[in-house]
Image (cartoon, rainbow, N blue to C red; front, side, top):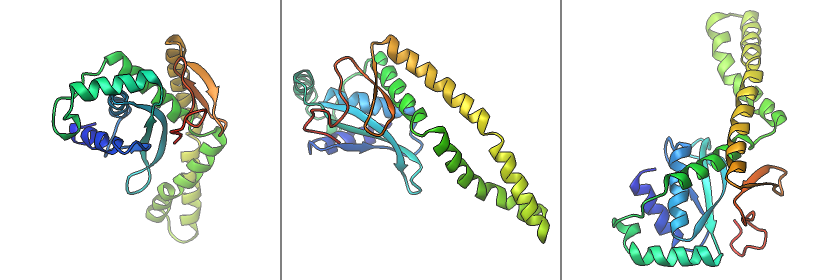
Length: 210
């Protein structure tokens, strides 16, 4: 995430409200760096969603105020050291290990965002605009429908490969988080999440629930 977007995020955080962070072609590393910077000024990573950008397909990280005394003290310390961080001044340096852990959390949350059944439905709908041009270009009359259906089936046949890749990523980042002392919990939507030691899901005793 570029410095311009980082500084915009810091200005939005001055409201004390939950903030949504995204950007064009934002990678999980860039999103993790944004969340890590927000942590320096009293916010914490809450969740990642896929509803950003003009078509609603970009990933959006949600950060919320962290009400713990440690977070309040860290924020006050960094506001004193970096008074112009939001307006072009010096920014705090981020610990690479903190960024990597946030990247692991964000990536795991992305892999656990949908169930296999939901992925099948989404893939089935998404495969239609991919298959239709094949039928229109290669077929005519009744063959258009036949070729479109065949192309759709070919795309759907790749789903098991996608599921296997997703599970491998999920297992990889779950292992990294467990090794770092993170605890698996189930959120109100039934999703498996990993929280840092002493961490709580937004809304569980926090007045700043997003």
